[in-house]
Image (tube, rainbow, N blue to C red):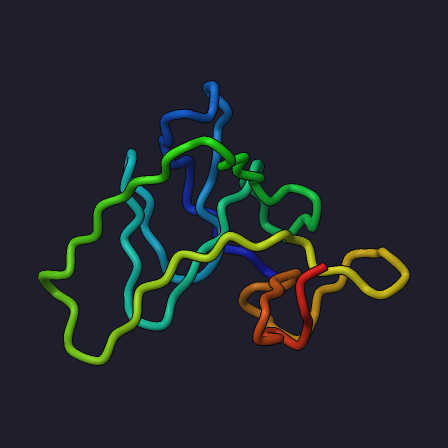
Length: 120
């Protein structure tokens, strides 16, 4: 699976750990990520041309605060913006990582079985 990693994103509160926006049709710039309609990103620990199931960025949020700003000035009606925190990579029943059937975001999992797999 091919990834699109356009560069580093600057996030505070991670102890200086570099993180990257990896996914489809996005534009990172400093602390911002520009995303057109029907796009998505995963936050990863490496910027690579292939997906690494063990390099998704974990966010230890217990006792922490998450804040972000969204510019909706150019968004039309009917659009959905969502932020999901899921335990990636998805896993097979034997415990190995599972790419699923989603070409633009392999290893993704959630409670609705998007990409063909549930979260571990």
